Length: 80
Image (cartoon, rainbow, N blue to C red; front, top):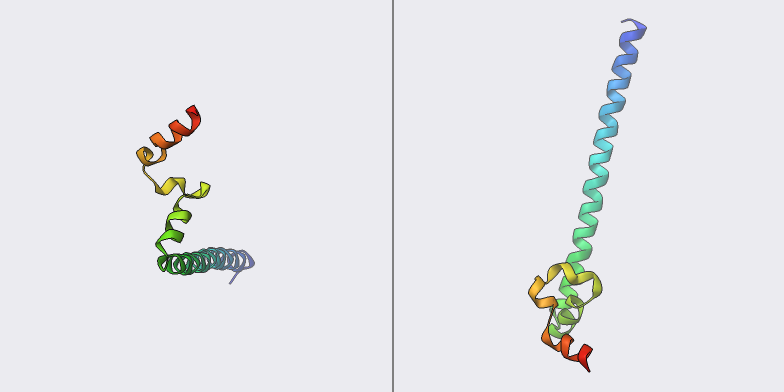
């Protein structure tokens, strides 16, 4: 086996290992975030009031439809 062939094989092995490591890291992070979200939702599921308050957080705006964001109560508060 020539030096060139050994270097090509080594680079190929390193590339495959790098890709596999990246995939493993992404899967571990995804599993962690999903379990964290599950725990948060499980804690909120016990109290409907807590769920309602959590859905009204500024970061939760993406969960509500557009029509639910603009309410007439908000217009009345702004007019007074």
